[in-house]
Amino acid sequence: MTVPDDRLAAFRTRLHDMLAELSDQDKAAEGSRDTVALDQQSVGRLSRMDAMQQQAMANATHARRQQMILRIRAALSRLDAGEFGYCEDCGEEIAPGRLDLDPTVTRCVSCASG
Image 1: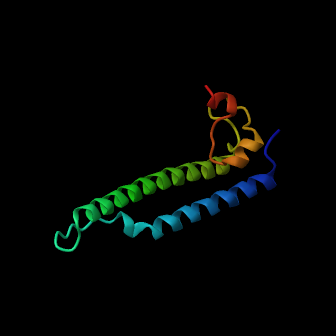
Image 2: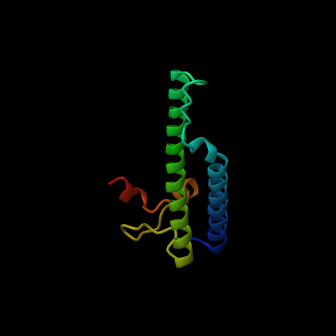
Image 3: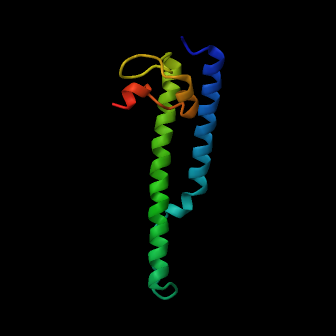
C-alpha cells in the first residue's frame, strides 16, 4: 500500500510547519546563547554561574533544534524523491501510525527495534 497523494501533501505541509516553528523558536532564543558577560562588580558568583548554566542549556536546545531541522529537511527530500514512507533498511513501508507520530522517521518498527 503506497501513501496516497493527499496524505503526502499533508505530511509536506506538516513538515514545513514544523520547520517554520523550529526556526522561529531558534530566532527567539538567539540572545540566550550569547556569551555571558562576567562583570565582577555587578554580578555575584552564583548569578554568573546561573547565567552560564542558562547559556549552556540554550546551546543544547539550539543543537537539538538543528538536528530536528536536518531530519525535517531529509524527510522533505524523501518526499521529493518519492521515497517517503519507506524504511531505509528493509525498504518496506513504515506504518501510517508511526509516520503520523513522527513524519521524520526513516525506519519501520521492526528495523528500529533491532
